[in-house]
Image (cartoon, rainbow, N blue to C red; front, top):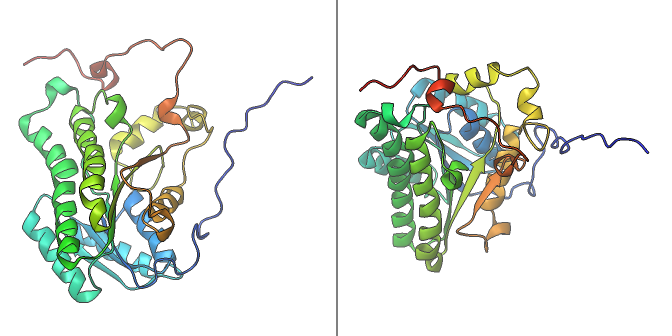
Length: 299
């Protein structure tokens, strides 16, 4: 009898593989906020691969230009446009929707990916720091969702919304009180609006990513990974591997697709069960200030 050797979850199919039938999103318009970089761009790429016309929005024009060219080159992609937008500005959001409608048509799918975040002990958060994260992550998501919903209600057309969330909406997020509170609000919007807007044909779902390393990770996340051994990020996951960004894109395209019409009000966690991990004996508690290398609190 030999010892069982853990192998983890299998690797995903290769980049470029479609999760749904070719052309699933042909003739449909998908708006992705925060679509110029990172996971937002990865999500947009999978919609493009299935034939969608894309609108990507972000605050940085230079990133949008590069992303627009990259997404337009994805095999199967429809038309791709971009718009500079700060989602904290409802008037600018309305202008983006106006431009999208004029160029491509009313977006059929909205992916609320744009957010703000940084680690900080709760006691050190200034009012401006709190507002910067909550106003983008929660209020900005609401402004964009509201614009999408109102336009579809006025046009009497169905639509689908996917809000990118975080698992600490359930568990709490020490070191991220501002973001955790905002993401809890985003999760609640999913559940509330699914009921309010379901009768009008509008789906609202959430999608929570686990660890998906990519070139546009923030410095605080990148720094945290550097502190570990090269393979520690894999060994600390129940799947014994991290996620590939395309896996999150596949999940998003499914949730907004014709094959998921009866799924609404649900938040899907794509993290290899990492958020449910528990040890038989809890590790030593290390205060957040210590983890972030900060000295004693001084008012």
